[in-house]
Amino acid sequence: MTIASTHQHQGSRRRLLCATAMAGLLVAALAGVAQAEDHWPVKPIRFVVGFPAGGTTDVMARVVALPLQKALGQPIVVDNKPGASGNIAASETIHAAADGYTFMVAPISVQTANPSLFKPALNPERDLRPVVSLGYAQLYLVTRKGLSASNAADLVAMAKAKPGMLSYGSGGAGTQMHLVGELFKQQANVDVVHVPYKGAAPALQDILASQIDYYFDPATGFQHIREGRARLLAVTGTKRSPFFPDAPTLTEAGIQGMELGNWFGLFAPAKTPPAIMKRMADEVARAMQRPEVKQRFADLGVETIAQDSAAFTKTIEAETAVLSRLIRTRKIALD
Image 1: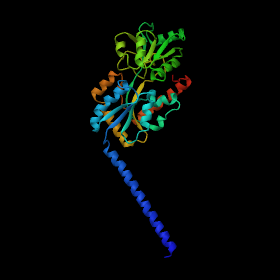
Image 2: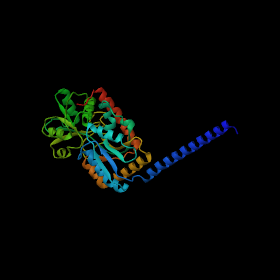
Image 3: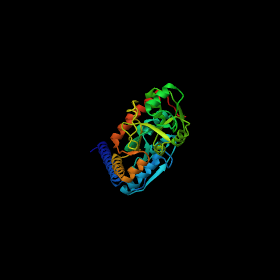
Image 4: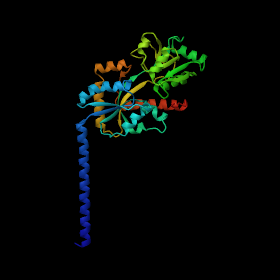
């Protein structure tokens, strides 16, 4: 054997050894990932919430966390990161390690509306994955007590007779209350003044004080409706509310395209292992069947609905199409 052929043989042997070693490392790495998934969770899990403690999203996260941490055998820590309509929490989740220990509990507006409202925008459609829905809350068309509209058709007729004279409140520019309010104006073809507040509670207070004419209540005014201090005319959605079954839907009232409500769900960083997301989704769905969870959600005006990742993704895609078009055509901008 010549010196050249010896070097060639040694080079080939080194390449073979290197390739074998790399293959071994890859197999070991994949085995490690699979083992980590099989043993998940082995440490506390974080639920990032983009709204203050005590709000609907925060309470939902904490209510679900209680039975969930018993089932998973690990603590679940709710981490409030309020601001920018949930975008701060979304950014925190997107940039977290995709190892199954960080999830976000949020309304789906983080994916449906925020990308069209914020510039520069996050890309949650690319960087977050819906794991499971937690529930759905209809919005309630509520008027001040003294307004002489007994149903939605009366309100529309009044708005058309007095363009620019009626006012509706919302929890702020870009909130679901605002977007549904603008959708109502578009579908009913009315000219009404938008009055943004810093949250749903002050908007409710001005309804009770007759400072504004109506708003789309996100289930904050139930007690006042039941006690007659505000009047419920209709609800959004495809079916009547289980909490006010006598109130018609806006579709029944003759105003089409008013199916939007508030969906809430659990989201994960995009590269979170599918097996972990599936386990989390299954455990959440089981937790949501517990009577105490259903009752606590009902207290918030939320129905427990656990859509799996595929169904939840379709819900988000459908609402994104409606809201992105609405934001563009109505030229909705944040304050």
